[in-house]
Amino acid sequence: MTHLLLSFFCSFQLIRFYSSFNVSVRNIRITNSPQCHLKFDSSGGIKVKNITISSPGDSLNTDGIHLQNTRDVDIRSSSIGCGDDCISIQTGCSNVHMKNINCNPGHGISLGGLGKDNSLACVSDVFAEHINVENALYGVRIKTWQGGKGTVRNVTFSNVRVANVATPIAIDQFYCDAGGGGARCGNRSDAVGITGVAYRRVAGTYTYQPVRLACSDARPCTGVSMADVRLSPASATGAGGLRQPLCWKSYGEAMGMIEPTGIACLQRSNGFVMPLTKPFNYTC
Ligand SMILES: *[C@@H]1O[C@H](CO)[C@@H](O)[C@H](O)[C@H]1NC(C)=O
Ligand SMILES: *[C@@H]1O[C@H](CO)[C@@H](O)[C@H](O)[C@H]1NC(C)=O
Ligand SMILES: *[C@@H]1O[C@H](CO)[C@@H](O)[C@H](O)[C@H]1NC(C)=O
Ligand SMILES: *[C@@H]1O[C@H](CO)[C@@H](O)[C@H](O)[C@H]1NC(C)=O
Image 1 (spheres, rainbow, N blue to C red):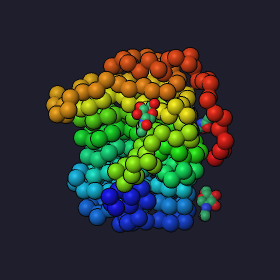
Image 2 (cartoon, helix red, strand yellow):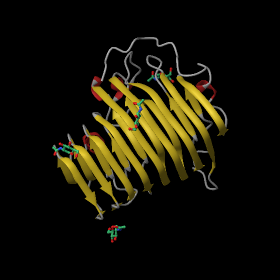
Image 3 (tube, rainbow, N blue to C red):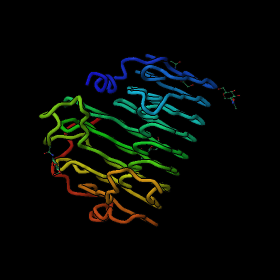
């Protein structure tokens, strides 16, 4: 249980930059960190290039690169293998660009968990392109806790290739790890809002569920767009069998080829506008 809570804070890491600006990290290899490998906290102007991170897929809480309260980040041409999120983007991050990243194995690229313990979370302007995720639990994921406040906005995942990924595309507004405990995980009237998320050209194979958009009833996801998403079952799928795509309280549009179909909730709002059941009370 404790290790899962530590995962959220990434309290232990091999290399940490705190309150550091205009930092460049390149041409290094980091292997077998006991927990997070590389963390940037309260920093800005970060460039990471040509780094290799490798730890086993079953090593707990070993995020590859962990960002919090950090803006203007460029991570490129790097390979990350670990037992947790390949790149983890936490509250207070904006203008984060990722390009030519290989994640294998691990939990994919992840925004969150955000809004834990009713906290305010703000993440904006995230762009990930030419991302290759293999042998992972997720491909690209946004996860928020029930009861949080704030918003995630303007996120694009473009040219993502997946192979043997359990759930390639996921938005989970019901995120709750085992350390969260009973009542804290129930439905609440608040949630971190998610608006403006684009998936463009996401292709490859999955082993469990191709798309899982699970947004909250209190604050549905808006402006979610998908264009050219082609996901097919991997030849060896999980023992539990495959699940159909889930699309719950998520509004936006689907364009181009979408396979498999079954994300119809995206089309219902006819575009980007959708009646919010509650106004946004918290601006980031
Ligand atoms: C970081 O670089 C930017 C752009 O070159 C510059 O404007 C800024 O002052 C620098 N910040 C620090 C803390 O050196
Ligand atoms: C990338 O980093 C490795 C060390 O991990 C180094 O050997 C290699 O020359 C670097 N590549 C480039 C293009 O700088
Ligand atoms: C969305 O984020 C991208 C990447 O940071 C940025 O270039 C773009 O200007 C942002 N768009 C809006 C409307 O803020
Ligand atoms: C929360 O609401 C969702 C959607 O209405 C439902 O599927 C889920 O079972 C609920 N969870 C709890 C813990 O009540």
